[in-house]
Image 1 (tube, helix red, strand yellow):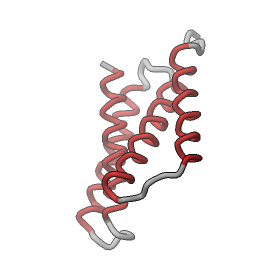
Image 2 (cartoon, helix red, strand yellow):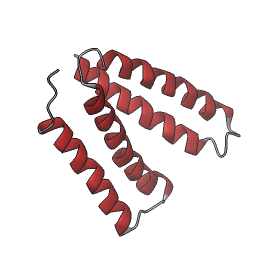
Image 3 (cartoon, one colour):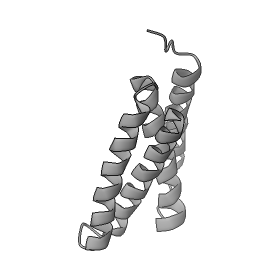
Image 4 (cartoon, one colour):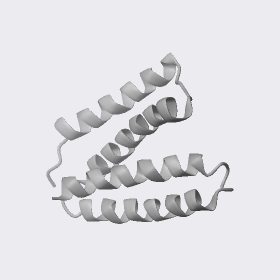
Amino acid sequence: MNWVWLAFAIAAEVIATSALKASDGLIRMPYVLAAICCVALSFGLLGLALRTVPMGVAYAIWAGAGIASITAIGAFGFGQWPGPWTYLGIGFVLAGVVVLYTLADTQN
């Protein structure tokens, strides 16, 4: 169940970041309030996931999935198409997440 909490934490963080962009510099208050609520929800769900998921692994997955998702939303939703170096950087981040998840020693 803790991996499910982590997935929901990622989704809430992605919604929060998208709402911040839609807020037009914190001018459109419904989006600002949505961002604040989703950030709080994301951290709460991340806290639940950290009960059993190792902290470094959970944060790497949370951040890596968030980066990849927000880049896609930026491209398709806001027309902010990344360049080749961005794709390379995201690839490195995701490779690091895979290494942490599959190869890192998560036993204490």
